[in-house]
Image 1 (cartoon, one colour):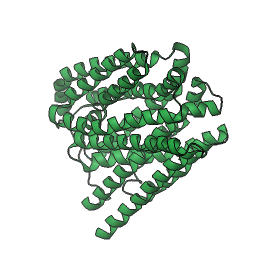
Image 2 (cartoon, helix red, strand yellow):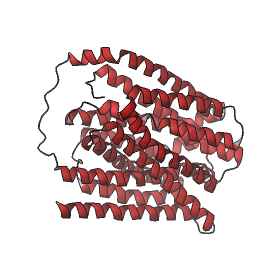
Image 3 (cartoon, rainbow, N blue to C red):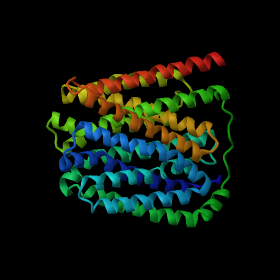
Image 4 (tube, rainbow, N blue to C red):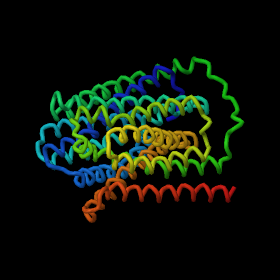
Length: 398
């Protein structure tokens, strides 16, 4: 499904992306507060919950990307939105623990059909320059609405109660479903209009790496990105505990703990307009090393000031790692739906591994202060060694 697309088409795709990012981030950032306040979940339980969601995402994302490549992007989008809407509608009426857990699992499966598909839609048919622009806009859109979901989510929960976690995303996703039907209906007209526009001449890129080097960076980014999400998805389930440590309400938690999201957004903007980091190992390895240090610092911060300062470096590090993974996936890969699925599956692997290690450490070493932070920090260090190993091996083979 490779067609040339006009600006109206891409704008609609970015609209789908932005609304979806806000809906999903709002739900999954604050469902851990729901589990704490209504069902008594502590750090160990929330981490185990997050690990289960991550494992579901890992197995579903790759297959969803392949489904989109085989069955069509619009079909995949409609499947994803319908599944998520139904899960949220049913979940809003289930006031017991297993019901909320099941609804969250089904929402996770549904969203797996969205991100590989939208990534492919905005990237198909682009030359090197257009791809850089498309990936840049994509990252800025989802990062801005993701950060907004964390920033104002606590306020919405305090004002309207936990039911808003189901109702607001459900309404927004229904709007996306309607937009998808409209987009599919008008896609041919939009494409024909785009075909009448003169295509910009593709300029040769003198800095284009060799195929072997490009593939090595793809593998390194695919390795690094799950470890970034190991850090993120260990941090997020522990937000209720951090809030309790610093005596923050959900609204105050949203304000204080969303800083890293806005820094990630700023990093995306910088990397979009400056491509000096493309295929430069020192940027990727520095970001990974920084991630390890500030992750441990965030979860062990003795003061709110240190927590805020650490988030600045945390957001910058994960911003570069994520951007690398998506850019190299779209730049090197030809089957963009499937490669987008691999990119998302890698996120799911990180979403599972970090919370799983954290939960296990709390189960077996409950008396060690910050055992989960130290255990996950050790896991991140293993990833750092593997990253350096891939670079060393690839250079020795070139």
